Image 1 (cartoon, one colour):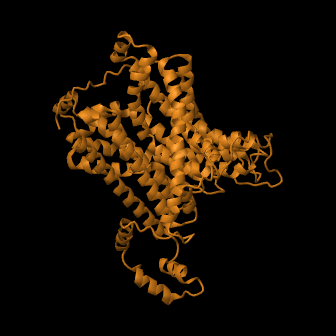
Image 2 (cartoon, one colour):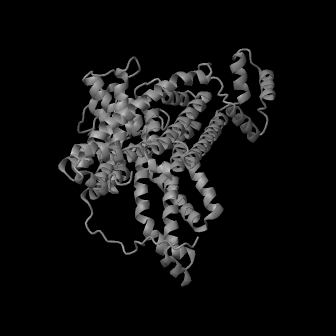
Image 3 (cartoon, chains in turn blue, purple):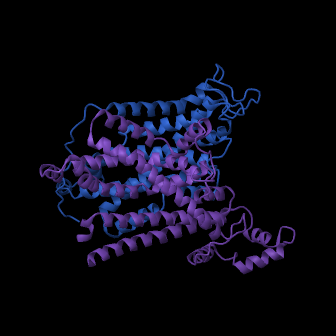
Length: 278
Length: 318
């Protein structure tokens, strides 16, 4: 356990003062989307489910800034309501996956032995299948409900935090500086806070952003194939399926949820530096 | 050589274990699906056997006794998994045909699509990656980087919808959906292939950059080999390994993509059948198709493992 590892500690991090433009842009976009999702529906004040069958598939106007769909529902209200659903589900599953994932990762590295082996085997079992397949099957237990989606996405996402934390924590905990702190009498909690968290923090943020992007995509994909959230809920994937038959009359309508989805995923990717982790 | 066989055996054992885990997970989740269905299972099965008119409480009771539906759930789960272990996938609850027969016809289509997607991704990623790798940090490199970041953010089904609208509906170059001939393969393959290539072209690029900066590349040039020969004989061969390894990393994306993209294009494969079965509550079909997709994932991973060992002689020598 106490093998001296000669991997240099990066405590003296080279502080990057200038952030790349793409990162700033991505972060601003994520912030903007979050604000729109929180405040938007209230600000617009239109019920996303209110139909008006006399004004279907209408082009953008003052009353409906993004037009109306095939049932005369306001597109702007529906897109914002969809943003609220997707982003809150993504945030919820990232938190649900991230906290236990990180804690179990540290536990695994700290105790080693059988604890490590059992937790590792559990993580491998989750990874035995492609994540979306698992989410699809879990969603099938109770179709149309958001909580199976949430549970499935969280279950597939925690593994990344676990594996990353376990691998980094093993290296950090074997570092001589940690041993020195231990000799000084620092307790486990303090050791983790002083040595581990600064080390793994940025990596965890990256995993969280990519995980949120995965969650947003999964929610939309399942909605699109009629397995996830059900109509009349305003959800981007569901909206795409609903508007697809009307592409000829109103091509600008079907492209709106597509654009929202792509912008959200792109913003999340950019906010942590684009393609670097793949 | 003995070492080589030992390492192959290790790979086989690991993937075999993975296959068992997949089967157990699929079995447990399908069982949970069965339990979550509303109503009494005994009545449902009796109705399926004798027809809704001929069925009564006594018939349901007989079914309950015969199938052991009054046993505790873990005994039933054990029986369920036992059936699965004998490859008894049962009959489709909707079509009444054996699930195995349905899957046998669908598997070919799904493999065709998966193969088409890999070919499409290589057709895009290899030229792009080699061109950018030979000119790192050029304008072309930066444009390709931006394009990769953007395309990576486009989910496969959204890309599929856009491609259908542009190439099938507006330009009428390809059929919209279904499967009638090879021309149906092109749009779905490229839908998936573009998503795969968005990342793998960067992997090719990095591999080529590494190879071009290596000592052995410099040596090949100083001993008098032309730039073209060095590229063909040394650089591309060495760059192949990370590319094949990366195909392995992308297999999860490929299988997930097959499920969703088949639905977009009404492709008669396993993924489409799975989504359809979930929607129709056809649990036997859900179990069969999910199991097949999961095992396909394991099998493709095994192929990549073995291919990496085949390409890189260092793996064999150790």
